[in-house]
Amino acid sequence: MKKPAKKSKWAFKNEWKRKYKTPESMYKAVVQYFDGAVTPTMSGLALALGFKAHKSIWAYAKQKGFEDVVAYTRLRMEEVYEKRLHDKNCTGAIFALKNMGWKDSQSMELGGPGGEPLPPIQVTVIRGNRTDRKTE
Image (cartoon, rainbow, N blue to C red):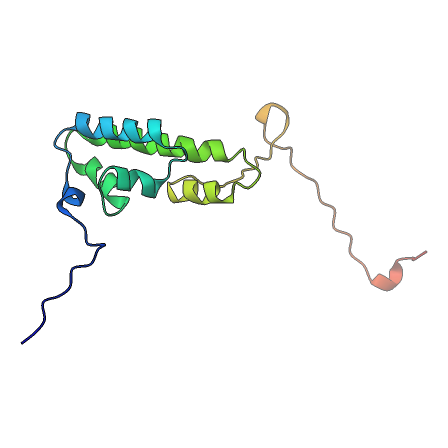
């Protein structure tokens, strides 16, 4: 006879399966988290909202009516990381923002004054042997 499996103390309870029925209820929970969190994080937000993974937050964007709440949530989280860019060690914030779609890029445009095209360059080709040239 098999022993029944021992229940882990880390097993998720029913409270972890709660879902938000209205965008307003999710919005209130998001605002409450950001207002009370000392150092907001994606994982902390997901836990506060009762999710098992932070990707669950973004999945709500696909549900009718929740698009604005998820966009607001994302913007608040980006704001947290963006503020950290001014810290001495901002590598983690840069990493987080890149994972949220931000890009590191540089662009260089070549042109004349006022954005005019550069004038053509005249190139003169000199033919001859190297032995014909004087060296000093």
